[in-house]
Length: 171
Image (spheres, rainbow, N blue to C red):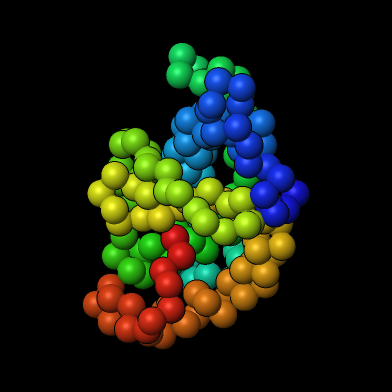
């Protein structure tokens, strides 16, 4: 589903919603999903016989069912594209799985106000290091189509875990 403003709404009590879900619930779901997907990518990388990234790693999709708990009203499915590829980028840039998860998942995210018509939501990690954005299917499809080239560029432009280019970092 594309954003184009139709997923973002306001509940009767004034709560901001996204796909008819309170944004506070979405925030917790994003955090729990990221934690599960980072764990999956770590395990998959450890089971692999090679650190080399392949085109198939960039095309891989992964879904994980997250059960309900005391903070979350219902179970949900978290979907990730190319979790091993993004773990590889983090590793090249010197971002450990532990730091990434701690920064995003162990502290409240701040939702940023967005002036655009797309309806996308933006969240900032508490330490200000990461910006998260909901993306449309079209944006996701496009980025996945260039992901392998992006990873190769990041590898070629990185010196001592510092990316020497103006291109944004996607983790």
